[in-house]
Image (cartoon, rainbow, N blue to C red):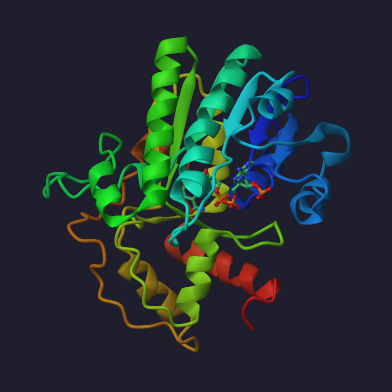
Length: 324
Ligand SMILES: NC(=O)c1ccc[n+]([C@@H]2O[C@H](COP(=O)([O-])OP(=O)(O)OC[C@H]3O[C@@H](n4cnc5c(N)ncnc54)[C@H](OP(=O)(O)O)[C@@H]3O)[C@@H](O)[C@H]2O)c1
């Protein structure tokens, strides 16, 4: 284990599905961690973090509101690295996109990066998403999608796809800030993240699997590009943080695949469930690839397979009582 006891880092969204895995792996590696939550008085956000090994001596919790710069400054102050994960995450329709998604994602990213700059942070890892890569209907049909591909904002606005719009605008704002202010920023773009859940509340991507097991026929046409194990996503964040040669965006999926592939695998593994028959090609024009995340593989990441992702996720849903 690398001994990072003298190194303090901040994880915004530390209470969330991915954030709590990242906090756990950072504590395991010896880091001191400042993790942010939305409400320090809500045990559903704090208890699972406080019970992690090393938390008693090396974890500090901070309450933040993404649109409040001062709260972010207080959380980041005293750290040398920032992992900015906090952002509202939903594939469902929202009533007030500006307030519920766009403001916290975009203003939150600018506030976090500005606070990092003001606190003298050396490197920032921003958690973007494949939702800043797709939907992109005009990408050439014979080229596998990669980190050069950006979500088409006009398409999102026409179709009311506010989550991809929020992630795209937030990532663009991060790159702009990094360039203007000379801040060292690197980005991870995870696919649909699944695996063992620590928080008591189920996040959006694990809810997708639960819905599938319950028979939901949604194809997530504009949201899916591949699945990835939550532990691999947390590891990817640490790899790009620690490896100073890492730069730019990092697509983070076990493979580029269609939701239909995923649904078929769930059905094969758990035939006793009511998994609907979904056509195999659910993502129009998406070319499959085993090496979509080549940049992270080159940094040493060995991705868990789709089967392992599904089995670990299923066991977690079962142990938490979501399925019988
Ligand atoms: N899950 C996926 O499949 C996936 C894929 C690609 C990218 N991502 C990105 O990964 C990040 C984490 O997602 P997740 O799946 O772990 O979701 P999650 O469990 O819902 O976590 C989101 C985190 O952001 C915090 N947050 C949200 N709005 C906030 C606000 N206004 N002020 C302060 N904190 C706020 C939440 O705090 P509370 O817990 O206190 O509410 C939570 O800790 C997000 O940036 C998401 O866009 C997720």
